[in-house]
Structure formats: C-alpha cells, structure tokens
Amino acid sequence: MFEHERIAVIGVSSEGFSFGRAILMSLINIGFNGTLYPVNPKGGTIAGLSIYRDVRDIPGSIDLGIITIPAPAVPSPSILFRFANTTAFPSSAVAAPLG
Image (cartoon, rainbow, N blue to C red; front, side, top):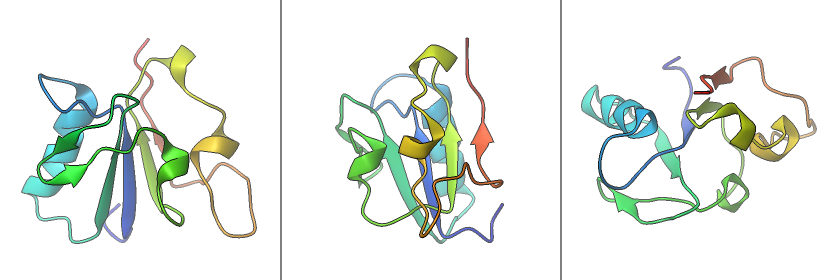
C-alpha cells in the first residue's frame, strides 16, 4: 500500500469518530509521505488538510481510494476514480462499505 503517492479517503469527518477519520489519522501518524485527500460532502478541515466535498474536486488523479461510507451512498467507480486513459476501477482500490 505504501508505494502509492496520492490517497483519497472517502468518508472522513472533521469532528467526532468515523472509520474514515480513523484511517486518515492512522496514515498521518505512521508518517505516510504522499498526499492525502479527505472527502466528505460537508467539507471542512482535519489535521491541517482541507476536506474535499466531492472526489471530483481533487486535482489530478489518485493512486488509491479508501471508501468508508455506507454502500448505498457509494458513487459509481467511474466517478470515484479518475486515472489517465482509463475509467476502469483500479485494482488498488480498497472498498470497505459500511452497511
């Protein structure tokens, strides 16, 4: 997992406990050296990072997406993961739908 440079964590809350928040904070605490993109429709900030309201707002592409929202709320993979010259769901994506 740590060869990735750009990770989006979908379902991060700026306050309180959430599975996404726990994953994001764990990546920060272990010293992940890449770029982290927390995503939540409510926006906000966490640990000095802006929370993107939509994964489509993330500039460029991501290497790994960690989905931590209820399954019915998960958009289609073609919306979630934008990679150069492909719309296929990346084999490196980790899905943990809660519901």
